Amino acid sequence: MIPGNVIEDIRYRNDIVDVISSYVTLKKAGKNMKGLCPFHSEKTPSFTVYEDTQSFYCFGCGAGGDVISFIMRQENLDYVSAVDFLARRVGITLPSFDSTERDDTTGRARVLEMNLQAAKFFRDMLYDEKIGAEARRYIIEKRGLDTKTVRRFGLGYAPKGSMLRDHLKKLGFTYKEMVDASLCGKGDNGYYDFFRDRVMFPVIDISGNIIAFGGRAIGNNERKYINSSDTPAFKKTKNLFALNFAKNNCADRLIVCEGYMDAIAMYAHGIDYAVATLGTAMTSDHARIIRKYTSKVILAYDSDEAGQKAANRAFGILGEAGIDARVLVVENAKDPDEYLKKYGAENFNRLLDGSRSRFDYFLDNLSKKYDLESDEDRIRVSGEICNFISEIYSRVERDIYTAKAAKFLGTEKQSVAADVDLIIKKRDRARKKSSTGEYIRITSGLSDRVNRDYAKSPKTARLEEDVIGLLMTDQSFYKVNTSGGPLEEDDFTTDLNKRLFAFMKPYLEEGTFNIGLLPSEFTPDEVSRVVRMMTARKNVRNNDDVYRTYLDALRQSKNNSDGGTSSLEDIITKKRKNKS
Image 1 (cartoon, rainbow, N blue to C red):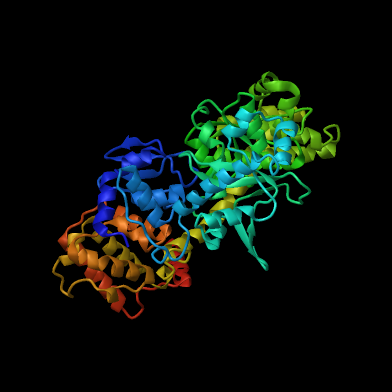
Image 2 (image 1 turned 90 degrees about the horizontal axis):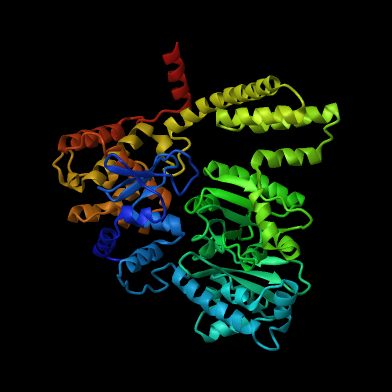
């Protein structure tokens, strides 16, 4: 374990506002700072950073914690790696931690070290006169890449057999570490190279670390592309290929491609603001990452049906994140790479400037899908268009699209607007009906996935949270004289709160507790719950008498015969009585 005083020193030297400001645009809101949450898509800021308690909490998704918790979530790191990340940021060197302290798992630093060695190996194999000959022909002759581009992106070659496995073994890495890094697999005949007979594309993060690889088959392989699985250093839904290059050039707009080669081809033609997803569709995590660098995206997807579906899905995800997305319509070529080879960068830039809005792209696809001369097809098209417009939040935007739709269908604008309003009203009634049941589940604790015992005794669980929240605001409350003696583990009924207090108790006795210690033993969601408890007490009266009152109420509630429980049926009955 890392000593508590070391954790506190690292937290003190990594001011939470400074750290989070490097990821999120924060603005002053009273004595706190606010911004758009990096952990969920939102258009109105609900992410709050509290400088006085060095904590953060999002009132939208419930994420919360301290600077260590933030880095764990943001950089996809485990606890020790996040602490090490912050320590290095301020020039502190931590002692090494052996595998028994790390639950026998391969850490991020070890994976990054392996990846670096693997990238060097792949590069050497590509330039080996005999081994890399076919791969060089593929890259230079078939794909048309020059040496400068190949070196810029660190392309390499993974040979047949298991040469990488043997190379890494000689460097002192274990087979288990190779598997954990997604560089090797394990079969009936032992360990083998995960990438074989493939052109290799290193995935580099914004800090310059090689975090993963993509491999393109050059022989007769059923799987054309394969990518690293998730590792302690990499999560495919949270990383974008070539973002390390694009991040400095994409303020005006960012191009998002489906494949590595499309992005590389753009850089080879002087277009230096393109990225690619890593073997996965666009995710909300991708959208939040993109939002840090730009508010405008052009989707450069393939022109086939699969590409159209991917574009439609990406439009929705990017829109939720507040990003203005448009789609590149590539004609007379199957993808951007082929178009650039045929027509060059100048014509491609014209295509970019003429990229289509989501609604125009939607109408284009409908005109290809249906016969607009047929009354039956026009009715079907009208239904799809009205459903599309009904999902738009902005009334101004709905009005513009309604006018376009009426012209497209050859009908009156009022007719389209009336159908859209009917759909919106019907959907609102359905949402209102379902929200009543959801409210009951939330207030009764039945939907609580963090504290699963909450529903057994909502009243007592709420009091437990109040007591812990008070201790989080001022740990000296623990030593306040109370009629029933100091707070003990037996005062808690829910497993989560009992574990929290058991962990906090030795630090409370010494007066050395800080929330930076929690992520070592509790999940990010559990840490978020603790911060919510603390946040709930920030703007209300907190003193010794308040603490005594809540502790007495907790003990009384716990000793009550029904434990403060209320069944779902009881809650529904009470609500009905209150209405009558």
